Each structure stands twice: as C-alpha cells, then as structure tokens.
Length: 82
Image 1 (cartoon, rainbow, N blue to C red):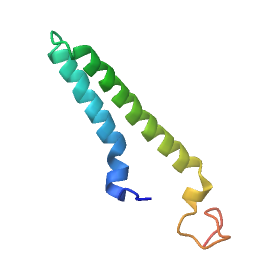
Image 2 (image 1 turned 90 degrees about the vertical axis):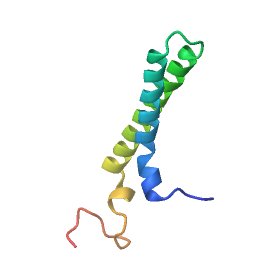
Image 3 (image 1 turned 30 degrees about the horizontal axis):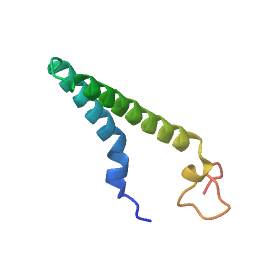
C-alpha cells in the first residue's frame, strides 16, 4: 500500500476546506446557472470533510499515547524524564 508524503497528507484538510469554500463561492457567484445547487452541496461537503479530518487528527494527536511517544525507545513514555 502506498502512503502519501507528509506535506501532502498534512495539507489535505486545508485542500478540502479551500476547495469547498471555492465551490460555495462559485455557487453563489453563478447562482443563475443549473449547476449552482450541486456545486453548493459538494462545496458544503468539502468544508465539512476538511473540518472533520482536521478535528479527528487534532483529537488523535492530543490523546493518542502512540502518537505522543513516537520516536522514543520501547517502554519509555513522554511522562518519564529522558
């Protein structure tokens, strides 16, 4: 399985949110067009997806012991002095 590079992975919530905001703006700007409503729905989903990914990562990083202790030798935790 291939993994995304760190800069790409870390920027995904911003890309989702900015893409969603752009689609919402386009939907508002071209509100007389037939594609305005689908564009608004996809834009709203993009904003929600970006926020959800960002919040889930933040929650995991704040509470995940595995994340806090990454790079440390086995058996040593962040609470113990090095």
